[in-house]
Image (tube, rainbow, N blue to C red):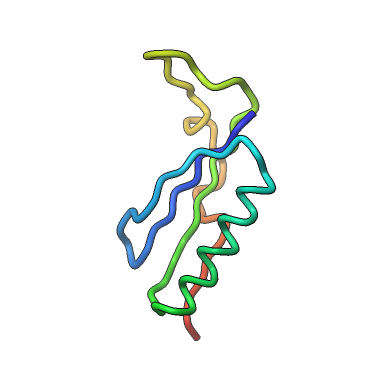
Length: 79
């Protein structure tokens, strides 16, 4: 069980992280939200949750193919 997190800042991929601990993921999102307040650019956070063990070697998972909702998990924008 793990999650891949992609952070898009003003339309460009800024960070791509993998988390095995959801408390660390929540803390990461909180830091992203605080950083957005400082720079003011729109930020989208996409989270792809995997309900299987991490693939070994050259294996790829197909979780992204089964997404029903392609909207960001979080959106931060200056009002």
